[in-house]
Image (tube, rainbow, N blue to C red; front, side, top):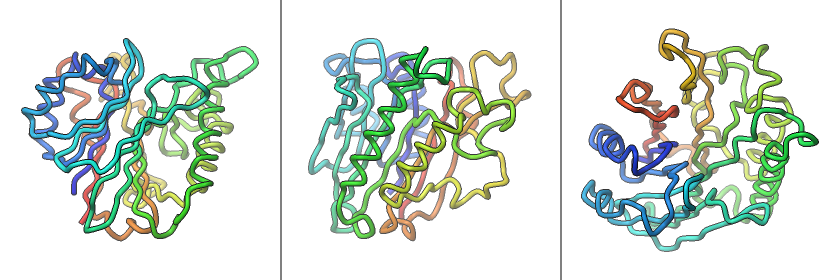
Length: 266
């Protein structure tokens, strides 16, 4: 089973890039974030033509939104809201993997605005509260070591020193502040999640999945951050046999500022 997660930054605007990625990587499941599309306007027919017959969406008009596209039928789909807001940030799908249920959580964590201070920036406060609710939800989940669960998405946090181009310069920049990093680590530990990227790529190696639109030449400056993540429960750790970031997608015409991230399960 091949799974790809991608903050596409408007699924309708980049439907051709989605088809290009699907043709190149041939995934069984695609998890999209920032679809920016209400459910009744989702490009279902175009995606069906790519081979994805099963589609679960949680979108709103103009902003946010997540969608899971699959060649494998869903046994169950759940839309989950946080902080009392119906803002299209989490969808869970359950499907069969090797005769047992596999729960796939597709997340788009709030970006958090520009100022890392909830007293003057309510968007940052919302992000912290969202992460707190994520932690509470997974703390309560049962079968932490035996259940087959995967968490993917744009978590909008680059947690480790080499997940950003400059640890020192970004310590006070939203997405890499100690407060956010600590909260994300609590979420990870709440369910014994394994960060697949750092299981395959050494912690001392730079690793990014996002490059700002503001850079004149994103590839030359290479000032990236690893904001897009794939986590698995211990029951799936030995099943993950490859991991890849499709960096070249950042250089496609009219690209998202994020690139697809992929894993293979044996």
